[in-house]
Image 1 (cartoon, rainbow, N blue to C red):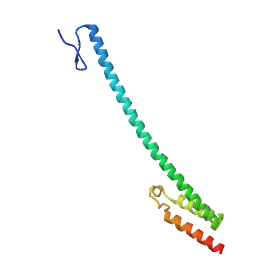
Image 2 (image 1 turned 45 degrees about the horizontal axis):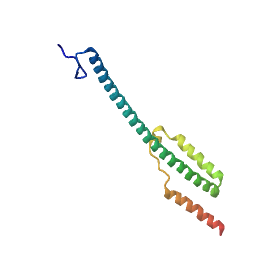
Image 3 (image 1 turned 45 degrees about the vertical axis):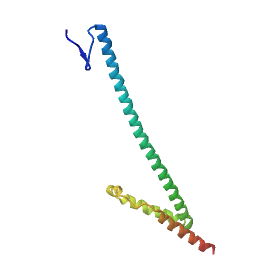
Image 4 (image 1 turned 180 degrees about the horizontal axis):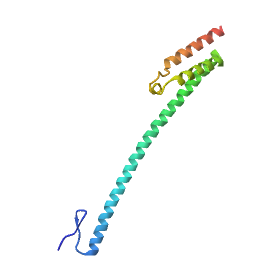
Length: 132
């Protein structure tokens, strides 16, 4: 007689044995697909975790910069007064509004630690003069 083949495996002649063998082979295929899906999901989670961690670092860096800029702003307010700071902020807002969308995509000069040092030293030196 003719030999039945299922998933590349020759099946027994007995109908019950043939059904059991097909079920066994189907279960193996199902388990393999399930494991592959699980592995794929784990990789996706790892990728998401990596992105999340990078974003957390970026958030902390941004918060640190905000804190630094706030302290610089406070020092400027102390030295030159709130009116001067308000005037500077208005000028900055005018510049931002006049920018085009392409200007916003261009990298801007970031505040460096050298400029922070220069501002801090100029404020402290003028404070020293007042104390004389």
